Length: 98
Image 1: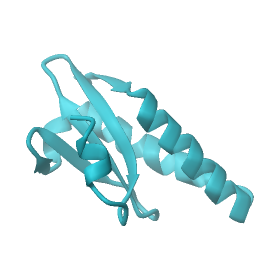
Image 2: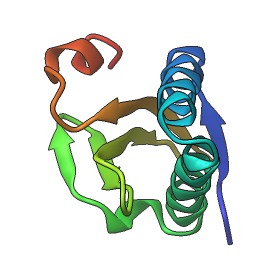
Image 3: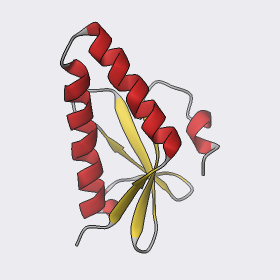
Image 4: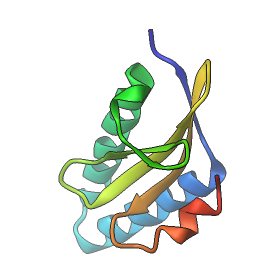
């Protein structure tokens, strides 16, 4: 049974910015990025406990092909995506959202 996945506004903004950046460099690459993130989010919804804890109760799942992580919290009936975050950015920025 899949859990409901809620994507916070900040994560949606990060996703849109990354899409635009990739799409600007190579047409179609932004769409490939979105597909990679969507696959990770679907995986999280199906099995949220699969991925490692990285900070307090925050878990992270890595995307394939792109250096991004999806950071999320698991609640009883849903999953909350806090960030879609480039792997080389300072983690303090997403930790403030917990």
